[in-house]
Length: 590
Image: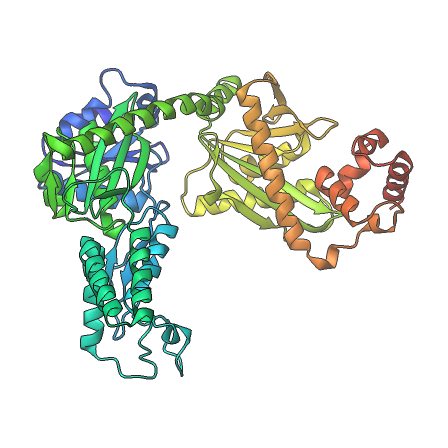
């Protein structure tokens, strides 16, 4: 197998993309370069910040793809990031969608609000800062221009027809010319024509008043008031009324913040803030961000986009196929400067939060690895069983990546081959099913497996992993004290206790993992047992009602653990001593 050193020596001096892989062959980072040889070699020479060192320490191999231009490399990079979702790449997910107004592409078009921008022939306007703003504008336009309202045409006219907000194509003929005229007026209004339309409505109001048609004049006066209320000017405005997006960025300590100002009809209506780690030249990663921002219709491109100096304007224009400006003076320059100031401020605020968050997550993982004398377990999988008197036995697995829950990888298991409350056999079955599947799928193994339990559960898991599957993944048990709180970390066949300070972030991380897997297993068990198992031995004990029963089961987790508890354990839960005595007598008799 070629070594990294050998591969580096034959890298071409051409543009392209590179794919970094870890020891399991998983792609953990995708980048692009104008000169592949220089970019890829830079990762393995010189000094780096802590974040980049963490990435480089996990690179075991790499591949590369040559392209004919830097823009082609950028497009390929975005496709590869979307395909592989590498852990070290910023992936712009559609979790910050903004509301738009849309004129549908139908025989009788409708005006609707939507957050989903599609290439369906509809006309989109926005984005709006929030749903309220979009809906208020729509209500105004509904009063002015009576397009169809119903999703499907009803059999008879509805209320909208009677209040003058629909022409009722369900019952009356509405020509294509009429619909086109209404759509044209709506477009004119939304394209910064509201002032001209206001003057026209005002003129019509005066004419109605002169004709002594006071009812019509009042209707038109109300329309003017609605226009003024909805289109009230914001404090931050632009001069020319052009729709534009304004980009600026700041970077420090391996992190980047990109601010996007949305300017619509000359008004600054909203901003988008994204903060993420970067591993290339800042200008290159900013270019990738801009490409992803509009990739596959994620956001609608306005007529004009402003970007800061230092970014290749021609590459952005070639990529986005729209007008790009790098303002050097005037109000446009001030807007870019303002966006940059916001980016710098947001980045500094992020750093103060990151310092606290890293202590709890990534650094806690690294300290845990040091205590266990192993590589930092950046990916941890933890298991817990749940059953009540052996009924509906289930197990659950949670996954933590870089010290944080990775809920996409959570798994639930119904125990199939075990009869009765056999915790060890249940653990064997679930461990076998989980890692036999990963072997068959040639999927990467976790860096550490945690078992909720002591030496018995730990031995059960190890017997499957080592004796049956021939795997050498580190396995540890999480033992609890008499108060059912995390007390010890037990490692390996001999259940060796790993000394961890109770006030350390590594210990707190283990507590969070154990609490999370216990919660997940218990929730699944409640879902599984359903109504058929709502009745239990606790129902026959005087002083134990439904609420108290649920509280006891939630606290102890199972009847077995309730049997093992002392009277004082129950008293500490505000259970009367005589009721606690009856509970223990009943459970032990059963």
